Length: 215
Image (cartoon, rainbow, N blue to C red; front, top):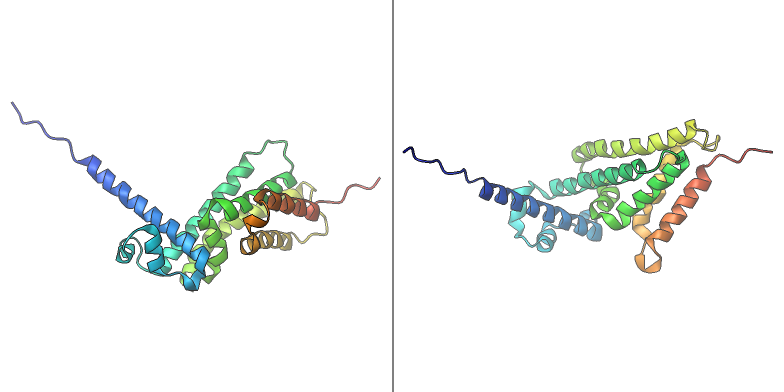
């Protein structure tokens, strides 16, 4: 009788890969928290390792340098912001106006920055401080996110929903700049996120909207 072949040890290999992926994700989560708390210059690998519950030398198994780790946080943060905002906009009914969609994007942007993702908050706050070569790679993610907002505002303009005197590029940059600055001043103990979102949406709608037709 021929000898039966034993099954390949796939489960232990997959388990080890899964454990490695979880450790890498834990390191990224810790790096995002430390980056938000201490800033780019104050982010130390020892602090990240302590928060991630790994030995500091183990970080080099996953990332070649401190800068590479921070870059990974920034790229992941931009990706999460892009996905969250595009998903929120896509979930709206066809009857939603173009200004409605902009307001939805405003709310989703603040949600991902202020509550849902340390990675996204770190990306928008500290991405510009990356070294030049890493910054150039990160800009590809930032441009993709900017394209989402560019389309939202261009669509509203084409639909006649924007004030005709608006400089649409300046409007986009001012809206995003104002939203991003919320990471520097918002304190959950001094007001709810919902109230901040409502206020931002009201400002965006009133600031961008075309004037009502004259009777």
